[in-house]
Image 1 (cartoon, rainbow, N blue to C red):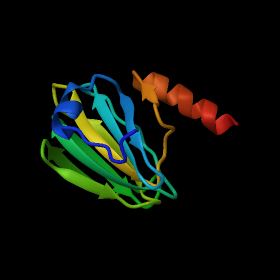
Image 2: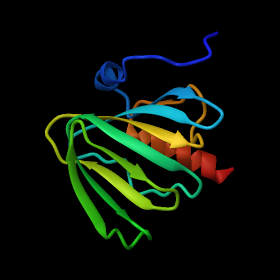
Image 3: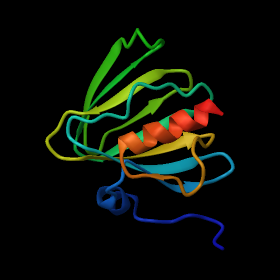
Length: 135
């Protein structure tokens, strides 16, 4: 087994057709690919213990962020080749405002999802997260 992960991240991201596919989970970081359909979104969320780096490889996004669920005071319109960092504890949402699927990848530190996680749709991801929080 290889010690490091290597891959053409741009090609992998653009070719990904699932809402969420976890590519690699290390002890301190996770790499996940995402594809969000036009008009779709990641959904308003906060990661209390995870910093998150996101890079858009294709499409157009509106990113909203703030210190509280009802206080999203920042809005950023971004497109391919833009990246952003969401510090732990920051409420945020990423919305596809384009006419094509939004293709992005994200790095979580520390990891947020189990190795091998694949959610083909947002509905599938929401269902899995609800089940996880019910435990």
